[in-house]
Every structure is written in structure tokens, then in C-alpha cells.
Length: 78
Image (tube, rainbow, N blue to C red):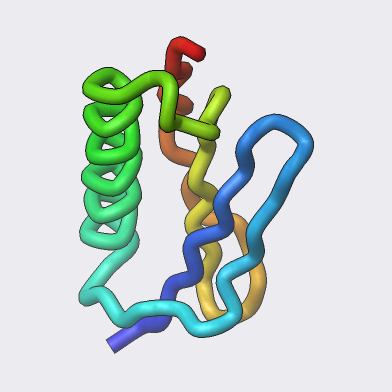
């Protein structure tokens, strides 16, 4: 099963995934990125004073380092 990496960008900050996760295809990896972004957004809406997120983007990379999908960004209020 292919390995995909999820790099998180929030404004100027970037967190590079060095471990990765296996998914059967790009679509499944992108769906996971969407699920995570939606979860972060819900958390920020419930407790905006505790949220450190501004506008998060998850870039999904394949095992060769190519960015294969950039999910939508979820702006949060803060």
C-alpha cells in the first residue's frame, strides 16, 4: 500500500510529516486530510480562545516527496 505524508501549514509555520501513513490511494489520503481539517475547525469553533490555528492547510505528499494534493484551507476565527 502506498505511503503518504501530511505536511501541516498554518500561516508561516510548517510541520513536516516524516512518518507518513499508508492508504490504498490518493483519494483516501486526501479524504483523511479533509477529515482532520474539519475536526480542527470544529474544535476551534467550540473553543476559539484555546485555538492556535489561523488558516491551516494540509499538503499530501507521496513517498517520492511530490505534493499530490493540497486540501482546502479552513480559516478559524481567533
